[in-house]
Amino acid sequence: MPAKYDVAVVGGGPGGYVAAIRAAQLGLRTVCIDKRDTLGGTCLNVGCIPSKTLLHTSEMYSYLEHDALEEGIACQKLHLDFPKMMQRKEAIVKGLVDGIAGLFKGNKVDHLIGSAAFVSPHLLEVTHGSQKNEVEAAHIILATGSEPIALPSLTFDEKRIVSSTGALSLAKVPKKMSVIGAGVIGVELASVYRRLGAEVTVIEMLDHICPAMDHAVSRLLLKILEKQGLSFLLSSQVVGAEVKPKHVSLSVKGPNGEAAIEADVVLVAVGRRPYTDGLGLDKAGINKTSKGFVLVDGMFRTNVPHIYAIGDLIEGVMLAHRASEEGVAVAEIIAGKHPHVNYMAIPNVIYTSPEVAAVGLTEQEAKEAGLNITVGTSAFKANARARCVGKTEGFVKVIGEKSSDRLVGMHIVGANASEIIGEGVIAMETKATLTQIAYASHAHPTMSESIKEAAVETLKAKS
Ligand code: NAI
Image (cartoon, rainbow, N blue to C red; front, side, top):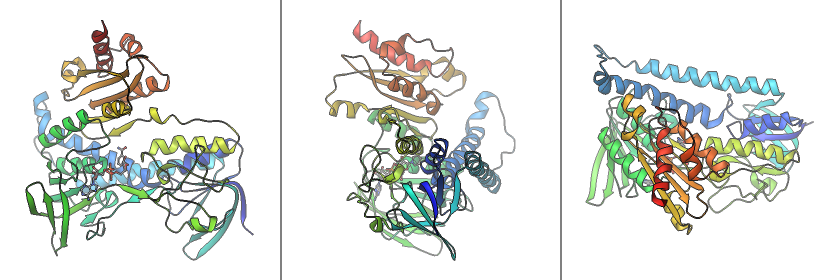
């Protein structure tokens, strides 16, 4: 006899586990199924959390190595204990994934370990080793996330040809590292290993990095990262690869012809794709898009009305916090509520040094949308706090719609951008105007004063 539930959630990442907890809080009998032994999905196990831990430690190491003396801190014998750095990362991941298991217990969500596959639209078979269980549910939420895209001739072995997963668990710092793709994962992990001493070359197909970002942001970030010693080959593609006993040899075709690059480790970070392997979507009759995303309506419903999908599995930016918003929303929809996810108010962060953060439209998107815009910027070199902490690189850019004066986009390159972008998120969520931001008091001295200053800049243009 199958175990019976009101809601079965497939996938225990930031989309799935949040959906499961909310569903249980709303009184629905809920199970969350995940094939990993630990909850938290890609984000906690092999994504956001381990990468941000390594980014933090490597940034401190780089600060002590290059910048501390400037502040009067002399380090006599700086030494990197790489295994310890990795152990700390694993301990942090463990603490957080155990925390989710605790939340499941507290909220009475059942956790089933195993791979779920549809037998029929309401019935899932869950396989864990030789063990099989059946789960029958009135509502099923698919939240199986995404997986890294591989390139032909560069099959992941997670040792020398690595995806982000392997790059977060290397045995040692490579001497030479090639990174294919200058997107979020590319620039974050290239930064980690550059700071730890690797010679890193990033190969990007486009003529600019981080294509989702505002062009002014992308241009400045490129300059800053180059100053930190990263090499970029733009408008370039890997056209051949040979895995040799001690290194990998890449043939890279760029604006000046073809060149060979050797690396100890190659990170392929050219994007991720929705993960539906083995789910048996056909058994439930679920439709996908031509790109393999599960097709849903505005209520996260697939073409099979009791089956929903959220997160990386459906079209949209692949971000943990977006999946979580959708997780809460889908659980509330199932419980008969009417939630709304405001996609314009979902922030996007790149954890380089300095950080990059954005919410709303880029200047290019605003223009393409035909908006009549006003733009204000403020550089951190004019910010007192930035000077005190020695982090003057970057700027804040605010974009407003002229007639309503409403904020439609905020872009920040600078220290703590990931935190202060919260102000932009609240402003977008509450439809705040640039005038309101300009007149709101900001503590002095803080990095966030540059947000106010950027907004003030737009008022000057008006007066
Ligand atoms: P991405 O879409 O951010 O960047 C991929 C890059 O690879 C693009 O610049 C693209 O032009 C380039 N590219 C594609 N094919 C190529 C080829 N054959 N040769 C050279 N360059 C090529 O994807 P990424 O960095 O893999 O990240 C995947 C997802 O994970 C993203 O949607 C991202 O938002 C998410 N993520 C978010 C993080 C954050 O919020 N801080 C951290 C890590 C990942």
